Image (cartoon, rainbow, N blue to C red; front, side, top):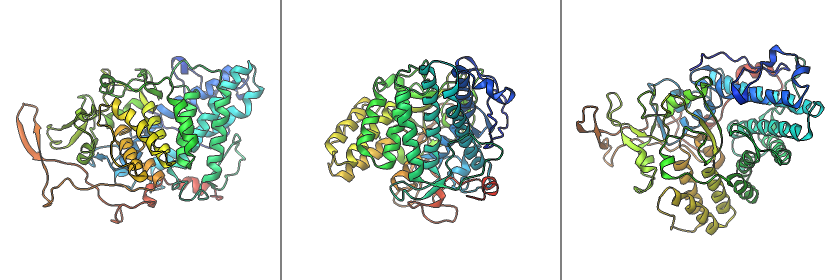
Length: 497
């Protein structure tokens, strides 16, 4: 793995990029003349490429590498990942002491990462029209910049405030749409409504600008990605018809993977179901480090820290292809923990990172159909996904709330480890569900394990170890502990917050 570098982010005009390989190659723009950088559409595109690479592969620590940090944090703060609290990386997120702390390194890293990308995209959007190049190329660059800016604001809206459907006027985070300078004044918090208005405007523009664009790799943003982002946004804002339409467009051409592909380890961007992701190479492999937390079965994985809650296993039918990925750990020190071998390193200990799949679009479509009252349509779409996973189709109650509940359970099953746990809890105004793995008498439930020497023995099954918020209050909807905090340094530097 490449050596980590500390990223110094600031909301200033200087555009901070890194050197990348192959298709994402670019020169560091803080060492080049800005006029030269934006002279042509092709050179302006290197700003997007470099920003994307930095956004994914650089970090301050091995537990803060790229955008994957947001995804791992979201899952660690949810119901189904039983994070080992004696392992490096995410135990403080699991215990809800991390992101509530606005003086911590992770809160600063995530906030500054998102706003650094936003500022770089503001520069591209402001300057691309005056660049040399064909209109088609300028449209491509501008469309990708608007989509990436919208993606960052969607993350701010998803994690820094409660659900839009709870209070769309809740102040959340500042909006910046112009390139910052050393004289730029910090802005006050915009409301969720204002942020989502910008997000939808940017994505709608991007959808038009990218009409004639065909990408050459799945790191790039095209109309499929844009519509996938729109589907997420419309689901958040309760625009069910739009969510359905966008999800259908996004998943077109991305068939649900078969059994063999599902078991390969969620590590290859060439998987036909993946709509968007981040590819890794031996030379550019920083974000692969996320698999040291996710991969709980490969011998080369360091931490094995994202174990599964045993109750999560009970959500699956025994014939479900995903059910076969569970096994009780028999290694010393981990006896009785539940492995879920969804994520596995490639042979050379690198792994591509998934950001969007067709399965998510089926689930958005099903949920939006159910919430709009079209429960029969919802069940039809849901069962398409279930059938692909060889699970039992849903034949239960057609009451709206029952169908919505079934879709949300399927989201947990299908999207485990992909970063949706906390954002779904916030979005649906739900709550974290964790309970001890004990029987009705309060005694540990026994499980059978196989030790490395082949011995089969019975031990206590192990699951969650944190069952309340830091103040010992019970998990509840709309808790302040769910929200990411604005860093203290940002508050000190921006009195308008």
